[in-house]
Length: 280
Image 1 (spheres, rainbow, N blue to C red):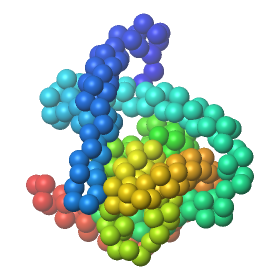
Image 2 (tube, rainbow, N blue to C red):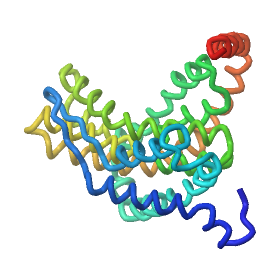
Image 3 (cartoon, one colour):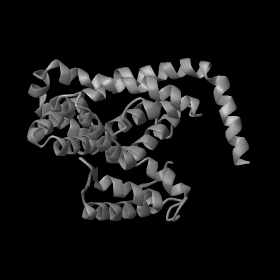
Image 4 (spheres, one colour):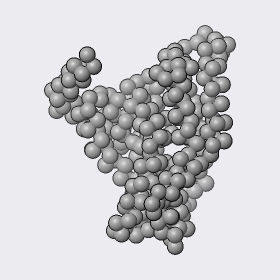
């Protein structure tokens, strides 16, 4: 959506600005909520409440906004992400020595995110997704991943829609999932607490905080070590993750999509026909 002037833009989007500010204040007022579940812990961050409030205000529920507002707001996502990306760049510069002197495990563990492409992409396509699957499965879809997808394909693209969908789901369920998964892996006794702490640093602060808090609850004597390893790994993964996503994950996902699209064409057509039949 293009506007002839700034006045015209504000006339359409003022409601989005006002409600977004209101929801931010409400979410920050609620704050971080920690729930002890068995030996582990689940953490709910302000972004969780903000996303829920935003969903409730949409045209499908409370109808505070119509589709015109939703389309206009989608353009603002990249604006909100830019300060985060700048902050990440500043963090990278300040921690360059730590990154250069990090052990091979810390430097290489970010490549583990590539494995999700091989599992998630074919499953998403079998479930009926098209180009949306590229954005949905090429990364964890946190802030800087969204920026990369928007830059590569455009904010109105199917790929950007898939990335945004996973960002929203991750904001709601991601922290709960990571907290429970960390607890489950910790209880097996197969892994050293240091390794578990490092594994929580996937490049997303809310995921790291949830998982590392669960591990600290499970291994109280190693709590400081877990937190230190998680923070170091998360900083490095957040920085290297930009380049891994940009130069490896997105091109790889795009090529695999073209390959799988030919393989799954008939299966996906049957799935789409079955879904249409159920809707009718």
